[in-house]
Amino acid sequence: MSYDAPFAGIKVIDLSQGIASPYAGMLLAQYGANVIKVEVLDGGDWVRVTAPKPGGNTALSVMGNLGKQSIGLNLKSSEGCAVLWRLLEGADIFMEGFRTGVIERLGFGYEAVAAKQPGIIYLSVSGFGQSGPYAELPAMDPVLQAFSGFMAENRDLNGRPINIASIPVDLMTALFVFQALSAALYARRDETRGRYIEASLLQGAAWLNEYAMLQRVIFDGDPPSARAHRGVYQTADGWILVIVAGRRGWGDFCSALERPELRDDVRFTTAMSRAVNSALLAPILSEILVAHPNAHWQTRFTEYGVMHSLANESLDVLRDRHVEATGLFSYLEQPGLAEKMPIPRIPGAPPPESGSPRGTAPLAGAHTDAVLTAHGYSAPEIAGLHARGIVAGAVS
Image 1 (cartoon, rainbow, N blue to C red):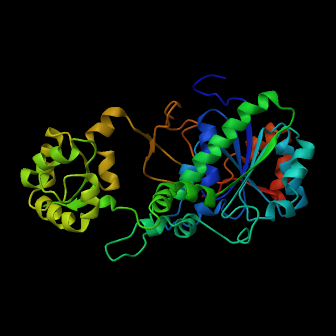
Image 2 (image 1 turned 60 degrees about the vertical axis):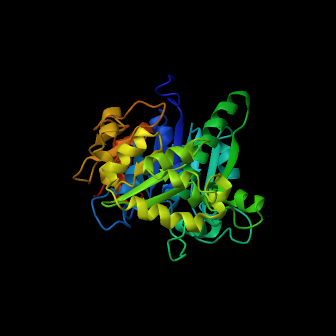
Image 3 (image 1 turned 180 degrees about the vertical axis):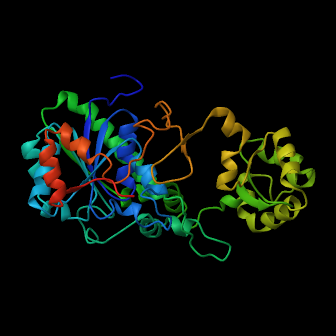
């Protein structure tokens, strides 16, 4: 164990799907855990086969499987289940992400697994949770964005709720799951048994939208408009985000705009007055900011200490001089993908190297034979499992 790999020696059996739970498993792997991803035989986890660009790896499968080993296993057969029981020997964490009830029908519910592995930390991740009226409903990130009110808090200019494409619910849930598993591993030092942990996308979505919800509770409905304090405005050649904050924020902003009359306008002198009059203020600011290009406003806002940022395109970020100087991304070659994948550094973990186990998201089944060998299967036994369709190796 070390700061670079605090979870070295921890064995994880990962049956999770999608991205929320797999991403948490990826974080465990990046901190040193041995994570074995169990995938179905017909192409692996569904995130590998839903993208239009083939190759065995996708954006989501790279994010969710970096640093793991992958075994293709037929859990619809008794032999496949026997293999999984063998893999579970000595495991510290078991992760599943099927619809409610499926894992029990496979014979690997918490009670069954804990009976054979009393110290197991068992994680179940679902859309709406394991109980309640919606427990069996299928759900993904956008469903919970809509359900939680998050979409309604992010509307376009026509008032239509917006689906944020960067899977914020999945990632929020993943971080909570990683936190819960890490805390459980820490607590288990003084415990004689493991524990069951339930997590849901609904919980992640609720926290993602918590600020907006609390604001609406506090103000008993619509809170004062935040557009008075922050906004994305069109400039002569793009878009820029501006935030007015602190006691001097408004004055500094008006100085940067070279509009002292706005600073002294009684409709806008306080944060509350700007919020009340945001419908008047927004078009005034829009007219001012669209008159000059981004470079002009960046210079002015930097001079007066106004918080701001260009509304960058995703690929622009990779070429940004600050991003390059800080080494934010590692560029890693991945199986099935022609381009090197930019992977952000994870706080507290060393950056992965291209071609290393931690730096590789395997194709489905890439480690089938190696995992079986490590769990005591002989070469003839492995060949027989392949021949009978119980296991499968990597197929891009």
